[in-house]
Image 1 (cartoon, rainbow, N blue to C red):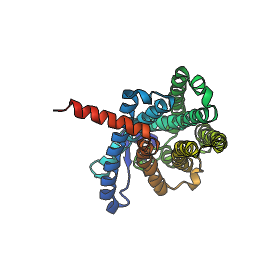
Image 2 (image 1 turned 180 degrees about the horizontal axis):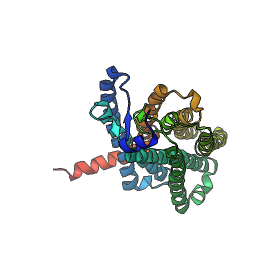
Image 3 (image 1 turned 180 degrees about the vertical axis):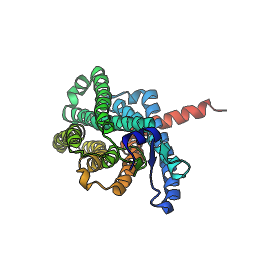
Image 4 (image 1 turned 90 degrees about the horizontal axis):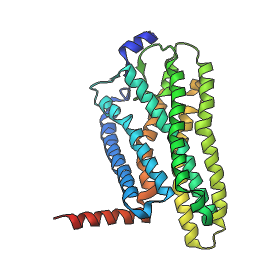
Length: 312
């Protein structure tokens, strides 16, 4: 078996999906299409949120942050995966692996906190509609968004530091990118102490936000049920229901990966779960949140018509 120094010098080999060579071509095509659509959908949301004055609201401000997060989130892993699936080069340098681990964890942590902020925004809009603009004012929006980013990167710094401080045996990572549970499996020593510290951080960054979101939606559901208009109820449930779907998809996979004991973590299953939250969830966000929304559709057609008018 190699040592930590060997891993440092030679980097790592990402096993990826080489255990299932018959799947690699299908996965390459599937992931290429999904990645392209993710880039397109999230970029459209960011552009529309900037161009259309009707979308200059707290909800779309936070959505544009979510879209930018998803762009970075997928780009931190997918290009490497596509190269891996072609079988050209399955290696990644030590520095590249640490950078990928840090960036991926930072973006994932930021999204965990951002989804709580978005739940708070919906709570204020539904439960306190008359005071919404005074509660969720622009200064608060910018402060909350900045807190999400800073908190996510600090959490990643702590967890990446703890992960890479462990001595590692071997340099084969049974995954398609550098993810923390795989490093814990590769450790040469007992990781009980490190896991305990990480578990506390994960509870704060994953479990606590999930609980806060569910509590906020209990209050939202109560407020919606008091709305007398069926159209008003339908609109409120539609907006909040789509947010909850994203929350369940994102947190469900995160809890599976990061909150179960390492002794029961399966690397093979973990790869497919990771595929879900790195490929599928980021494309669902623009579809669920906005592209089915009347305001966004209106803004999109407005931009398309303007482009036609400017055309030859």
